[in-house]
Amino acid sequence: MYNTKIAQAIWTAVPVITIGFAAAVPVVVAAVKGVTKPWVPAAYVLAEIITFGTALTLDDGGKTEHPLGGLLILALMLTAATHTALLDTHKAPGAK
Image 1 (cartoon, rainbow, N blue to C red):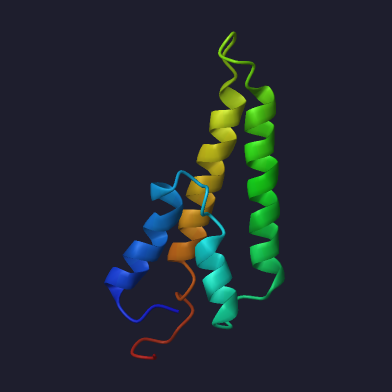
Image 2 (cartoon, rainbow, N blue to C red; image 1 turned 90 degrees about the horizontal axis):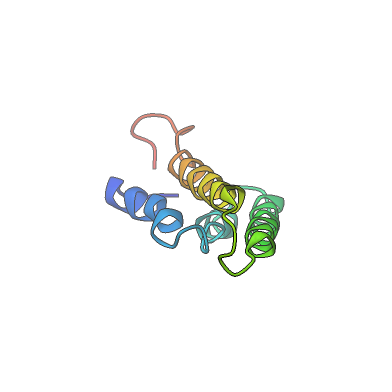
């Protein structure tokens, strides 16, 4: 999936920089390249919809605080970054 360590770092940073809005993008690219199965990006898109839908549903205009929405977004962001970082770890040393 990655040609260099810099490319791996950039792809890993995508879910973090976008605060989870682009959590599925690296996984979609991996599926197009044949690194993951096609259902994996679909699961990430579904997780994004559920996460952000829940966070927006819990928001009542700032009248009360609901930490669950932020916690779900943080969990999605960290999970996507971790999975993106681990995409090519099964390769043998020196393999391309």
